[in-house]
Image 1 (spheres, one colour):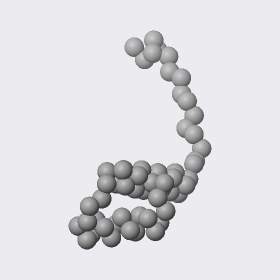
Image 2 (cartoon, rainbow, N blue to C red; image 1 turned 180 degrees about the vertical axis):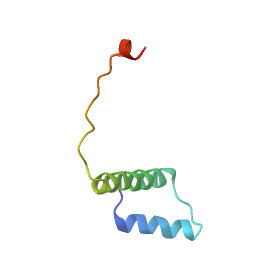
Image 3 (cartoon, helix red, strand yellow; image 1 turned 120 degrees about the vertical axis):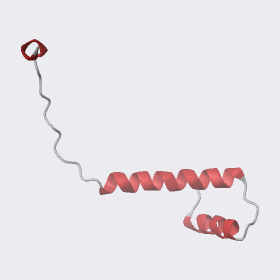
Length: 61
């Protein structure tokens, strides 16, 4: 997993149009995706679950 400095170096390489390996890109994408998922999960408050409702379909039909 790349560090913040490694991600910044990768960004600099891309902006400078330097060659970047697929492994570097894949690792950076996995890191950023994982961080976004974790941040999204952390900011989303967990509220009470909606209670299940049982319905007798024979009564409806």
